[in-house]
Image (cartoon, rainbow, N blue to C red; front, side):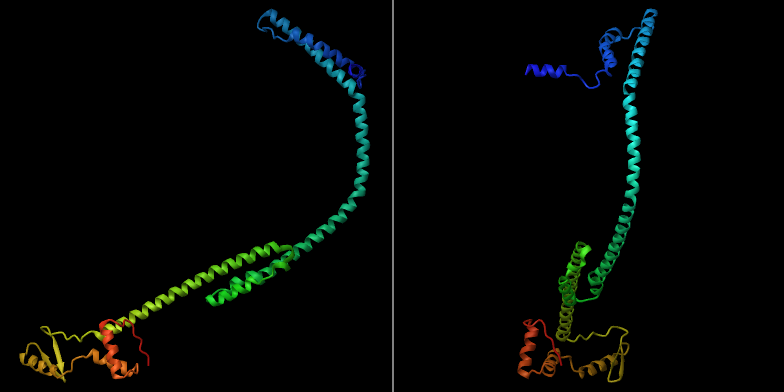
Length: 295
């Protein structure tokens, strides 16, 4: 093992002869570091002189080493230049052969790309007509119409969109989500409208019942009022007129809401007198809150 290591250490190094000058320079580095490693005080006469000598010695060592480098590498640099020039010529010839192939391939690739872009444009136009247009169709539809449109949209097959299949799937999902939102909003509007209609109907019925149950109110004449009865005009300034008015008003029959209710129940609802009395009594007592009479 020791012999092998010794043989490896003593084996001739590549370019050993060319590196002799660099080896010599390397051996001198220890001496240079020891001698010139410390910078003298250039502000003194002795220090300036010593420093100047150091610069001269180091400059000589540096330039000599660089000259040795150039001398050692010159044959190699000449060889590298020859290799570069020869390879450059060969590469140029290969490029001349390669260029027509690349040009022919480029024309085919560009034609295929144009065809693909045209195909994608047609598919997107088809997607607009077959999928996105559902949103235009949905305008103004009621909940039933929207529900039917959603069923149709769910049945859309995106498998035939080839290059833009993923885009078609995303658009279908977007359209369905929008349709479902519109359907929910339409249902809510319909529900609110029905509630408002029911409230208005109940309010109207309540007003009708209140009007039917309220006793007739006869307001007493105030000073300056003028009243008429059977074509006779009575004025407050004439006491005899008011007495005559009182006599005339006694002849006017009082309003009878209960009787009118009985008449409506018999005439409109078709109840017999006994049934009409029961229903009218229940209305007055509050047992019946909503009544709808239709002829």
